[in-house]
Image: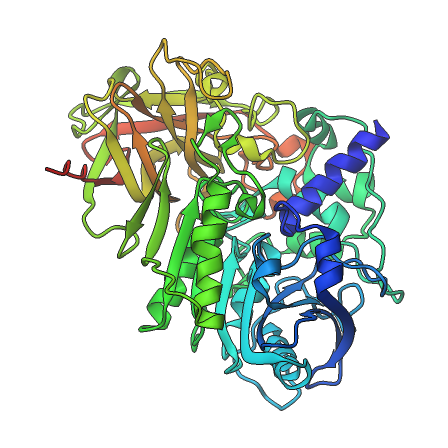
Length: 626
């Protein structure tokens, strides 16, 4: 069991770190063709950042630099060893680049004090003031001046947390930085990753910070912390047994995880979180930008779309492209991405991206080698399993449409007419709706495409679905939910899911899984109801008083095929993905007591003046060629 948990927690850590997991270039090739050197690059405030450079032994030409800055370490640190892979994917090593890896300030072999999502300086008060953009600038400046045989052009890339460092490095960038690719970047932690509209993603944050959140001691971290043994594979039972979140420290963390404590003390969108929002700072971005992500990224969907949109709005005229594939977190960097869970994508989408999108992007901007031929948005259409190109995202030609909640669990385009109509359910935080029917400890990536029939069968989940569709229907762009609700409690979470219901008798998929009646999870989101009017100023519900809640579920490009149904689910618990709301208003849920957790009756209205619905964009069906 201990061995299993070592493997499990390391996998959670690596998924979030998302180093390239693609098919590796043979280590012998890297050793024979690249020279490794280590450097301690001095920053403007005197701190040194540990940096490893892999430079081609070929001196017949000059090469561009491609760099990753990471808080997750850059092994191997031994001088006589080499990495097993170089660059964003396996094609880069033989293409010829100078590859640079750097421990960010305060992590592993770099000096200084580490800060999670270090706030970007509003204005520099002196020449020694630093943030992640200045550290990137100073590093690039040293590299182009001191690494032999470079061509004066630099690229930057990173996935997940390194995606944040990439995005921060684009701000007020060094002139040599010509191309940057933030991939699954964290952008604003109150709406992404660990928090979603104020609701806390417990099963994601807990194992991650158990590995990552320990403070950096006086001894340089050249070895990772030993993986803990939680004694069970059943996360649902484990987190219920913890009880209120105030028990995490006495039972597990022992007050050793600094950032966990900081999160607990800041449950609202206050100065602490606003300072860590990178989006307003994505100005003065000069390099070409390619933001990359996956439709089924369980961690950083918000960061993907909002980073792209912020760069687009705040830097008119620069090259800025969005790439979205049918991927879980970081799956585009692997050797194979043909499926997720029971959903097959029909081809190796990772290989297509690496050869046809990522490599041409960097080759064009750093080597002037070829035309990249990339559109504004290169997007994979799930449901039909095909790549699409758009000159704008979301597409300009979508038709807005609403699907309304209707009697007997129907979902219809007709607005409601009944004057007194609602559906209700009993929400018990001590018997919460599971995240998935899988037995899992952390946040399984597969929940993003899992079968939701287990939830439809529960009495505390409302379901609304269309009749079988008479034609293909493609949703494109953001899905916005508008639900009118009431609760007998004084606080509540609200979860909205959009689901693709397969016809009965549907044949087996390419993986051999019978798919008849499968309810494919397409998109979902949660909001902590106390934040329905303001994320900075929470307020309780008045018992039985109807209120309107608006919730953006993020973007999709998904085709519900003819004969399928569109389903919407609504419920108030989603455990252990989301921590339990007591359903009784308390000032800080992270310090709630056992006695605060109460059962509540929830109502969802469907009347002309309280018309609960989802708002979507419908993409016209392309005309068949003549």
